Image 1 (cartoon, helix red, strand yellow):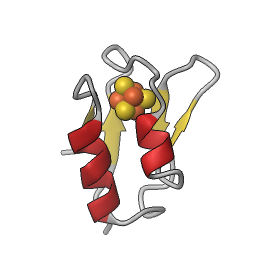
Image 2 (tube, rainbow, N blue to C red):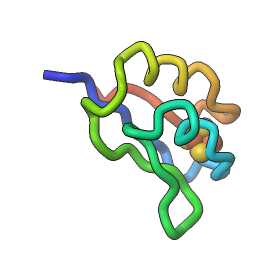
Image 3 (cartoon, protein in one colour):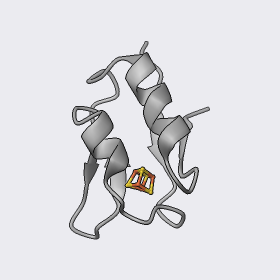
Length: 63
Ligand code: SF4
């Protein structure tokens, strides 16, 4: 099963970087915050990159 990412909405500042890095895995909601969409949408490598590049470390792997 593909690993799933989760976004901490309290920490997310809505910069949109994750959604532009992995558009199949993250999108900004009407609240201006990111959330994970299709867990298998982008490669694990892509999601790793999004996790590493998030300026506020709001993304993590679901345990
Ligand atoms: S990169 Fe981080 S702060 Fe920016 S939208 Fe994604 S989760 Fe939010």
